[in-house]
Amino acid sequence: MNNQYKEILGSWLAAIGTISSAIGSTPSHFTTSDLRNNLDLWGNVLQATGNALGADGQREVSLEKLGNKIQSVGNITVISGMISNFEKETEQH
Image 1 (tube, rainbow, N blue to C red):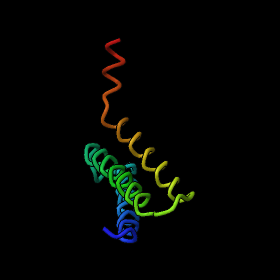
Image 2: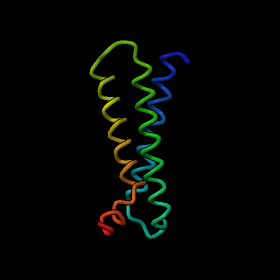
Image 3: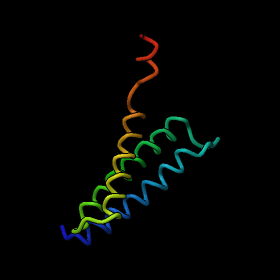
Image 4: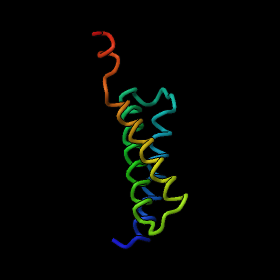
């Protein structure tokens, strides 16, 4: 895939993920808690993927590339926190 296309696709994925995560983070009487959690989770997955693609599409080392990598790692950290069951683990110990 062309590097320019990687950056464009990555930007779109990150934008869609941001919107999805924002909708999932907004309290609403019209959506269930499970739906909001899923939107937030998949939004972070899309953001992480988009930022990783954006970083991969940049040829030279730059602050933009570093920023995309940091954002991607941050989203992965959020994802791991969402899918890990820390509450049950802490109750057992």
